[in-house]
Length: 254
Image (cartoon, rainbow, N blue to C red; front, side):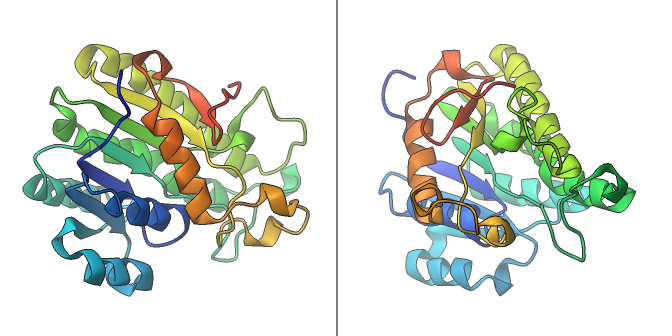
């Protein structure tokens, strides 16, 4: 990309709250954006999405999506294709770290099949299967970006503390899928840039139990996080495809 990237049609996967919801809000505030597709398990129950829907009307389209259900993924992609002619931006923002009685492991003895499956389904399997289903909407010649929201703890080279086996591994796997897809799309969709992005520690439900030791200046609001990530996205070039960047645009080792 030579000029600042300005998408017209965007899909935010995992949009009911936190970073995903902030992406929806920030994109709708950009006048060139014609339509934002926002998916979540139950969009009708997201007060944030419903408020934005009232404010922006048909510029925001809500799509139910369960990442653990292949038929639901196919249905969401079919609905998207019926609404927009193409996708300029896809952000996979879904994330699972704790919940349903599950928490990140501090030691090997706490690793379980249940936590591994839940974490990988949301953080790894769902995003790549969603890209697969939406790929036809990237068959165009306009500039496009696919951004997978990863995490610095998914960096193998940066891992100095251990723990969080499932979450770390799920994000490492997402990074590998991102890199692999970028190489394929260099041939199939050369207009598209594919990246993994680390948002920084953001004040969301996902990070809430772990914020106590985070300095205030390093704990971002969802709005600040998204403004920073959109700045990174807007400055990407073809040479950046397949890379892993932090919220400030600095590269992160695999």
